[in-house]
Structure formats: C-alpha cells, structure tokens
Amino acid sequence: MILVTGGAGFIGGNFVLDWLSNSVAEPILTLDKLTYAGNLATLEPLKNDPRHVFVHGDIGDQILVKRLLAEHRPRAIINFAAESHVDRSIHGPSDFVQTNIVGTFNLLECAREYWNGLDGHDKQQFRFHHVSTDEVYGSLSASDPAFTEVKAYEPNSPYSASKAASDHLVRAWFHTYGFPVVTTNCSNNYGPYHFPEKLIPLVILNALNSKALPIYGDGQQVRDWLYVGDHCSAIREVLAKGRLGETYNIGGWNEKANLDVVNTICAMLDDLKPRADGKPYADQITFVKDRPGHDRRYAIDASKVERELGWKPNETFETGIRKTVQWYLDNPQWVEGVVSGSYREWLQKQYS
Ligand code: NAD
Ligand code: TYD
Image (cartoon, rainbow, N blue to C red; front, side, top):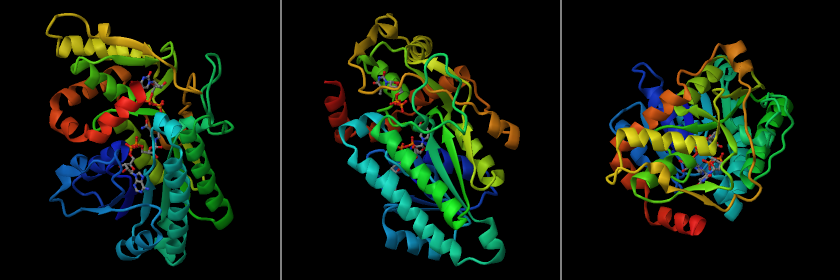
C-alpha cells in the first residue's frame, strides 16, 4: 500500500481518486489534518471502498506517523500535505513554516527510521515522493527561458520559501542518508475539487454568484497551467520510474496571462450558462490592489520528464478548462460544503 499525505486536498484528493479508479490498484492510506483546505467530501466516493483508509492527523505528529508506518507498512509515501495558498502565507506565514518545513522534516525522519528497519526487496523498492512547486524557482521576465531542474532556487513568498526549504531537506536526506527520494516541481494546477480561494475556481464561482472577478494589478502576470489529472499521471510515472535523488519539473507548456485566463472562463460561462440579463460575465472583471511581491511569470521546462519517462499531458488548456468549468456547474453540492463561515471570513479579509 501507499501512504498519501494531504489526500483530502485538491491535488492529493484527485490523486487518490485517480489511483483507486484503477480496479487493481494498491490500497491507499490517506493522512490529512483537514485544515480549511481539506475536504472529506472529495473522498466521499471511497467511503465504502476497502482499499482506502482515512486517518485524520498531522504530518508533524511523530507518534502518529511512526505508528501508521509500523501498522500499515507502506511501500511508498507521497507527500502532498502543505499549506498552499500564497495570499494566506502573506497574512500568516507561521502555519507554512510549521507544516511545510517542520512537518516535512518530521515525515522524513519517521520515514527514514521505518526504512532503516526494512530488509532486502522492501528496503530497495521504498520511495519517498515529495510533491513541490515551480514557485521555488522565483520569478521570470518575459524573455527568460522556462525553469529547468538546474535553475537556482529564488523563492519570493513565504509559501515558496517554505516549499523551497522542504525541497532542500528532502535533497539532503538523499545525499546524507541515502534515503530514497524523488521530488516533482509542478506548475499551477486547475481542475475539479479546487478550493475556491485560488484564481480559477474563485473566478468561476464569483461569476456564477454575480460577484466581482478580482484581478490583481494589471492582470499580465503569467502562470503555466496544468490540468490536475495530468499532474497525477506525472506523479505516477515518477513514482514508478523516476531516478532516486532526482527532481522532475512537471508542466504542460501552457503559459497564460491571468487576464486571458479570466476572459477564457467568462467566455465559456457565456456559452454554458449565460447570465440572466444576457450581458457578458467579463463585465464583472474588477482590477484590485496587487499582491505584495507578486511573481511576474512562471514557466516550466518539462523536457526532462518527457525525455526520461515518456510522460506527456493529455489535456490542452482549452480542453482542461472546459472540463473544469463544467465540473463546477455540475457539482454545486461540493461547493456548498466548502464555502463555510471560515471561507467567507477569508474573502472578507482578502478582498474588502
Ligand atoms: P491544498 O491546500 O488544496 O491541500 C493541502 C492538503 O494538505 C489539505 O487537505 C490539508 O488539510 C492538508 N494538510 C495541511 N497541513 C497538513 C498537516 N500538517 N498534516 C496533514 N495534512 C495537512 O493543496 P494542493 O493544491 O492540493 O497542493 C498539494 C501539494 O502540491 C502541495 O505540497 C503544494 O505545494 C503542491 N503544489 C500545488 C500546486 C497547485 O497549483 N495547487 C502546484 C504545484 C505544487
Ligand atoms: P493563485 O491561484 O493564488 O496561484 P499562485 O499564486 O500559486 O500562482 O493565483 C494565480 C494567479 O492569479 C496569480 O498571479 C495571482 C492571481 N490572482 C488574481 O489576480 N486574483 C485573485 O483573486 C487570485 C486568488 C489570484
């Protein structure tokens, strides 16, 4: 079996669902703290699936993690658990340091002790897969080449700095202890089950609820978008065939300016669910104060994972964003479940 941390979040949840959609898949043990970003509703389809066990807990809890490893004896750990929202990291970096750095450190230490106690084949096949972000590389200008795996780390936000620190710990555990790690650094994801504090789901839901569509600064910041299902398939490939101690950049060669992304979503909604007054959703676009230290451009060079492991994304931005918009239209109950009081407080704090 495999241990997935952060499996009730956006990418972890998609990963668990995708993995278990294969009828012969190995079982999964999900460990998740269920912060505001963790939603058991995402894992609802697995409620009666004997191949899935959910444990509510913190990756920083040494006693719990050691017990889970001893009891379930996973052959791999995939670490998705993190605080992941840049704007929240600006308001309050402490949880980011605690979970992303100290939590990862604890997970590495517990896993190393467990791995040291394994023998032969079990020891040889064990993997610790750390899921990270392209944001650790910093910001690009319009003419810079895309990030490769050898680009120096230049994190600019408390979020990216905490992820960079965790990547360094993972790297050091390989070089110092020979602990079997792989790291993936992925570009911005979008797709089903995305918590509506991030740009794409926020814009879809605000549009449908006749609210402003907030664009930070001039809206010309560029992100490189990857459909979440493609990120999950890349993680499966790297887990199965990635070289130990290596990092792999994951991306879909889909650079888009934020304003273009928002206009694309508006046009899609005009088509799929026109406004009652017949006016375009783009009328709701509102330019707001920029994010402090806002990175201008991210772009991933994914040649290494394509060349070494033969991975390629299935979705283009156009096919992926259509699926995503349709998913939010089809799943109002999931949305209803996540927009709790604490979500409304966040919107008030960030956008008022
Ligand atoms: P998310 O915020 O949607 O989910 C994070 C999950 O981790 C939640 O379920 C939360 O409850 C859980 N969690 C938080 N702290 C925990 C702790 N201490 N112990 C156990 N569980 C805890 O994040 P996401 O977008 O799914 O991102 C998953 C991973 O992928 C993160 O490591 C993130 O840095 C990375 N990543 C995200 C993106 C993106 O675009 N979202 C892109 C590249 C990499
Ligand atoms: P986000 O989804 O928060 O991802 P990240 O900051 O990790 O890239 O933001 C994506 C881009 O959209 C980023 O450049 C910030 C911008 N943005 C807005 O313009 N308005 C918003 O309300 C949000 C949440 C983000």
